[in-house]
Image (tube, rainbow, N blue to C red; front, side, top):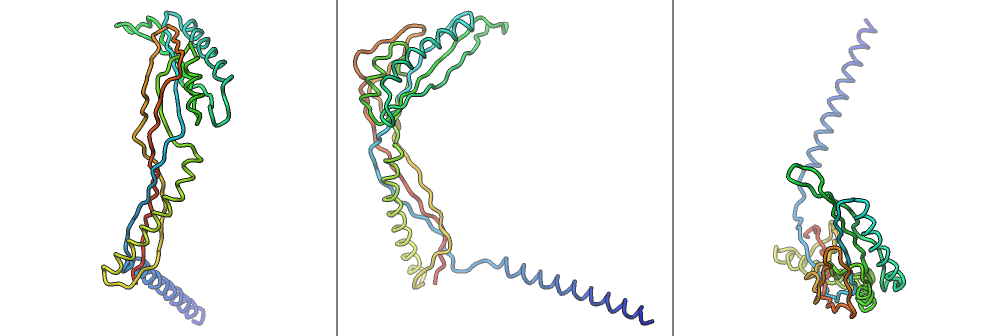
Length: 244
């Protein structure tokens, strides 16, 4: 009898503990899902316009032929000659040299048989010395300019990001203060914020573009005239504040 009584008592204790735990969990869940009150979501931005100081100039050539190996050889020879000229003029940050796309694609007839091959090779010159880049491009005879683009260097972006960020923070604080008073509160405190930065520009503005004729060399005696535009560096502050 004593052992049976002890077993029943233990069972009752276990059931009671389980019920208490479940009840506590339900209370905790009810508390955790209670939505915050007097919380305001908002965002504000700051932007700075800056002159683009990075030129990205792409030179390219195309070749066609019935034999893939011959087309690839011609492309490699044209690219090697351009690289030799470009590397002689290269300078850190002022003009960086790298290869771009290089590939072959088959051409098909109506029956799906390969009738020939077409290939393209690219060389990319980029940097902050516009005169050096355009002058080098003008002296390269085996490739022609196919694309001109402008951007901001890392140094230029970093110089203005701090200014744009300060403007965004000031705008965020001013808007939070105004909205708090507009809703009848005396002020606010920060809950959480996030900071995002991006850059926008009107796009490349080349004055002169030149494409090389298929299989022919291109020669330009003078540097290509180019004109950079401006970029807008924008920082956005978004988050929530507790009205009080």
